[in-house]
Every structure is written in C-alpha cells, then in structure tokens.
Length: 191
Image: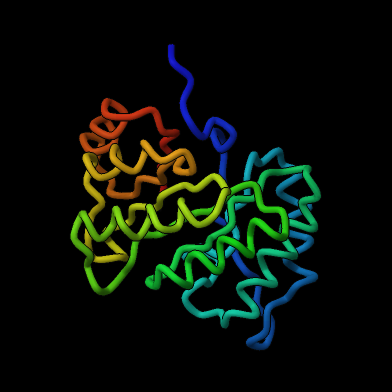
C-alpha cells in the first residue's frame, strides 16, 4: 500500500476549544486543556478552528492562542494551527506566524460567504502553499462556508507538496471515497 501524504496527522485530531472567562481568553485554562489532551493520548490539536472561536477572536488573540498551544505542547503532541481565512493574504500571514512559532502544520478552511469557484479555491490554497513551507490540511465544510471543494479540485491541490491532507466535513462517504481514489492525501473526517 502506498503511503499517504500527511500521515503525521493521521489519528485523533481534536479541534480544541478556546476557553473564555469574562469575555477574555483564559490562557491558563488553555494550557491545562493542552496538558489534559497530552495525558489522554490525543495525537494532534487543532487550535483556533471553528470550535476554537476563530471567527470571534481578534488577530492578536488568534496568534497568541496558536503560540500558547505550540509552546505548551512542547513537542509532546502535534499542533495543526487553524490559519484559514476568507482573505488569502490573511491566511498566508497567519500560516507564516504558525510556522514561525513552531506549529507542525496548518488547517485551512475554505473561504466562506463569497462562495468561490473551484478555480478560486485552487488559487487561494495554492497561494498559501506556495508562500509558506508548512504542511497544510484543507478543511472542506460546506455547511459553514456555503460551497463545496470538489474532489477534482482536491486532487489538483494534492499535487502541491505542502498540501498533505483534507478534513472532509461534507458528510458524504461518496465524496470521501472519490477523494481517496484520486489522490494520496490523509483524509480526516469531522465537522
């Protein structure tokens, strides 16, 4: 069997919550949460995704949450930082930041609200992959973004060395099977 790209992210990845207290990020609570996941044997943490309050944190908080999780993980658990954005430029900036602080990879949600074409998806993700030498996992969640990254587009993106996986959240086993038949990315499931 041929190895898949992104095997380092196979296993249990948890989209970690960003704990809040009185409207502020509870960084001590976040550090305890990282320690708890290490103790439980979680394979990888994905901070600052949807579950991690990405849409509601300001830029400084977003960056600090990534940095705190990476620092606390200290190589004991992988970190796939949520660095996706509706703005390609912002996604590149956040992904560069994640690399600089030592994240193992990034989770790239598809642009939301503006419903890009398949070529638009390709150009967005390709620009990030070309700008930052960090493993990237695409995040296809059409229920939240408003449009679907089709398997053929995923296969095109899989040709780029930095694209190593996809978190496939359509809920369609047919789509997941199509992706796996077209390319050798690691496929994660979940919402």
